[in-house]
Amino acid sequence: KEQLLERQSERLSASQRVIAEQEEELAEVARELEATEQENSRLRESMEKMMEGSDFG
Image 1 (cartoon, helix red, strand yellow):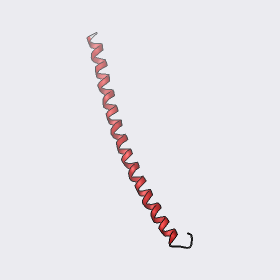
Image 2 (image 1 turned 90 degrees about the vertical axis):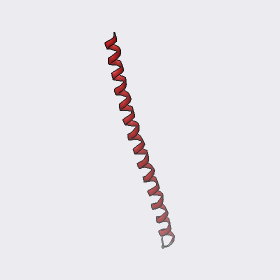
Image 3 (image 1 turned 30 degrees about the horizontal axis):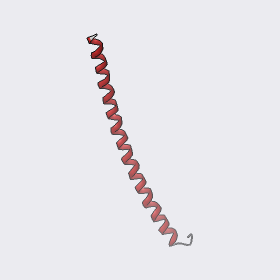
Image 4 (image 1 turned 180 degrees about the vertical axis):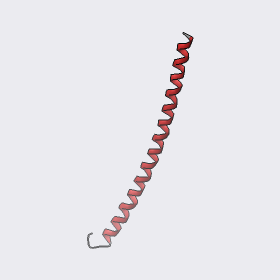
C-alpha cells in the first residue's frame, strides 16, 4: 500500500511539472499574441495615415 501511495505521489508530481511547463508556454504565447496585436494596431494606424494622405481615402 505504501508503494502505491508513493507511485501516485510521483505521478502527481510529474503531472504538476507538466502543468507548470504548460502554464509557462501559455504565458509566452500570450505575450507573443499581445506583441502581435500591438504591431497590428501600429500597422493599421500607419495604413490609415497613408490612406488619408493619398487618393484612396
